[in-house]
Each structure stands twice: as structure tokens, then as C-alpha cells.
Image (cartoon, rainbow, N blue to C red; front, side, top):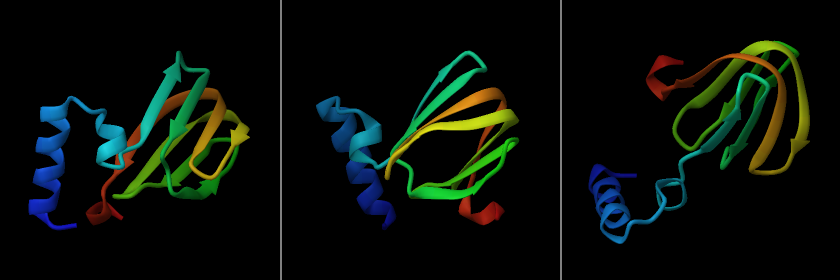
Length: 96
């Protein structure tokens, strides 16, 4: 999308007090301590092991690292991961 379109979406989101994850297609991440992470609005699983989860986002990727990972729920745009979560990191397109 163009910069102007992103600016308009951001302005509308702020003015109408809408949730940014809905209007700007951003991921919603909910963590419960270091044990659970619930991620909505992703574009697919790129890599999964018992120590790493990498998801495709609209812009970039999301990397979750830790240990003893188990995917408890996986749906087209949301998932629930259990295990010991050490790090959650966004990776921009330029950093790949």
C-alpha cells in the first residue's frame, strides 16, 4: 500500500477510535506469562519446531523463541502456542 493510504487508515482509526489490529490488518498478540501466547491475524506458519515459531504477517514476520513448544490450536488466522516463551520479535521485510 502507498504511504498516503496508510496515513489515511491511521487517521480514520484514531478519529473513529477503532482497534488498529482490525483496520490496519495488524496482528493481535496476547501472552499469559511465559507459558501461553495467542496470536490472531497472521498469514501463515513459516517454520515451527519445539524451540521456534515463525509466522508470516501482512508486513514482515513474527519470531517466537523458547522451549518445549506445542501448538494447541491452529486456525487459518489464529493460533495458540504453549511452552516456555523467551522472546517475541518482529522482523521487517528489509531485515530478511
